[in-house]
Length: 328
Image 1 (tube, rainbow, N blue to C red):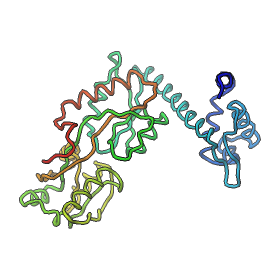
Image 2: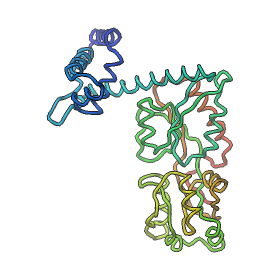
Image 3: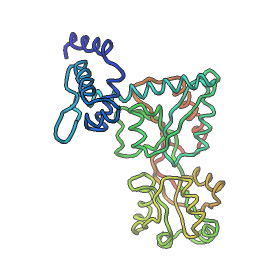
Image 4: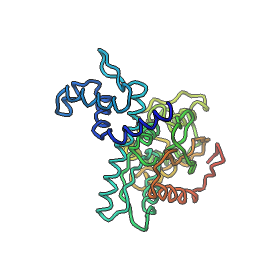
């Protein structure tokens, strides 16, 4: 695009583009039909058609292709949708920041966290995040790494604490490795006592009631690998879940149930769910937990301070990042 064309487009965006245009484009992408968008927005289809025409005139190109199967974004439309989603999310964050300020807080932080990260670590980092010596308000979203990174990129989240893993799409994000996690086998107290009095026997463990993470997650792949290295097929889990709280409850209520979780999660479950840690030693090579942020800003003081607090807390952890595999 020539410099003059770029200047003209920037002028049109600043002078003619309205937030309602961005909201409309996202609804068209979500619903795929102008009729459905009109019903959702409680307006007429001609009004929606006119608003779309206005938006396309501002951008100087068609943003959607019309077919019998509905509305599909063009290449330029997908670019616009990505930025539109981020802009509206930033507007929501502005609203949350203002609400936080009105309540005597400095800002609002939207944080994504994978389930197998210590709640104590996250709560301590939040406690230590005090821009201008004022507390912040925080909303925490739990989910799998890929889901959380998608929300980070569309500005639904400000930062994410998740696990680095091979094949993870890192485009548009940066990461700072924080620490590696130790593995622990957990079970009910009676079963843990019996297992702790005998040598590690994967054939015996295979016959127990396993609780595992969802397929494809790093934790699940690691547990499967432990059985494969012992020359065994993975056990069929009785429950698949990434929720530490649910894992604790399931083990506490099933005398045959076992699971492998990181040490800090195991210790929390010992305190709150009455489970016990089996003192076994086995090989582990789980990728490190990391702090993910967007490569491009905005990076607010509250985002930077949370990252600094988290890194400071993780420097006390005993597992060095440079080691790839280790034993317990």
